[in-house]
Image (cartoon, rainbow, N blue to C red; front, side, top):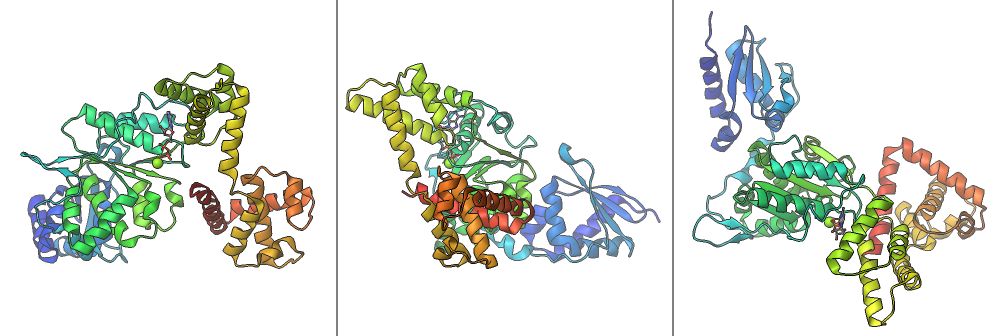
Length: 475
Ligand code: ADP
Ligand code: MG
């Protein structure tokens, strides 16, 4: 029997249409093109990988049923992905069981009224223009290049030339606080705006996004909000780690993400850690993040710190002797915001006290600065936090107990004390009931082994480290 590919697919669509709501049909099935038909397999082309995964995740049973109805029990469906990045389709055959369609309730958010109420629209006569919420001071030309940022920076530049049309979608930029994530993503947004004045760019912090969602749920306007986000060509969400454990917000974000990505819109995200380490984030969300490029910002090397500081001096109109610049960059390593902080307080000190900026004044300022930023990290503080975390009495850390849970807490506290304070091994040992420095080394090595082999432990330590660092920022 000779069958015509289009009539087979039309029959399939007919069955599908009866089983899904209008919106889902339009979104997920209308864009499909049938491309090849053989004895018992039909190949369909889908716009991109998200699409394929979404179908597989939500409609696999329906598709299976439909295809068997048309092609018989051996009927198979093959996918082809339209985008260049993934030409080789993966196949789902009739045996692919075990996935339940979750689509229906998820998609409700998409069925909103078309009129748009949104928090950022500037009222105008013509179509609403978005306020991008970008800060124009963050640009590429004042984002100094170095080994520490080469990859994310050049990915950002590529995106600004062709938003939505590179392999970097989403672009996830991650790294510790103060290393330039916000600056870089805002530079991308500003550049897109400059290159494509008609594209709408939106910068939003994950925190603000969450508040909008919460508010919209309260006011029954979630659909409007979702519709609003769908008008955006380049969506930048800063600090997505904030979405951790916020299930409802993640669900809505997932939906917005899929819609935008599917429509070839650009997503740019930042996070304080690698996507895979985002605890409390749904797996499907993390797997979306991995589609594009995840690139990290690392601590800038000395020369880059020098170049950054010099460019800030130019901008602020502050002049410093060369040896002072070097001295600052030599001593402030981990955080560019701190580098700027020292510069500003140095300038303030010199004009207030009417003093020349020399190494001595710089030393004072840095000392004060470093003391301030390290004020909270004491061995006692670490001990208390770790003891709380493992729910063991803090005084046991200095004791002799060999109980497993206490030994772990003790060794971990030593490890953190060594890494997060300036204390010597000897003085750390003293704070743990007068142990000697070789015990501290042994503990640190044991912890390192555990970190290398036990992912759950590693997560625990990560949480603790963050708590310690956060307590500093709160000051
Ligand atoms: P994060 O978002 O990662 O915490 P920010 O983007 O807020 O960090 O950066 C902190 C400060 O450091 C900002 O003032 C930013 O302009 C500056 N900065 C970071 N990286 C660079 C760079 N490569 N060149 C110039 N300034 C930088
Ligand atoms: Mg930031």
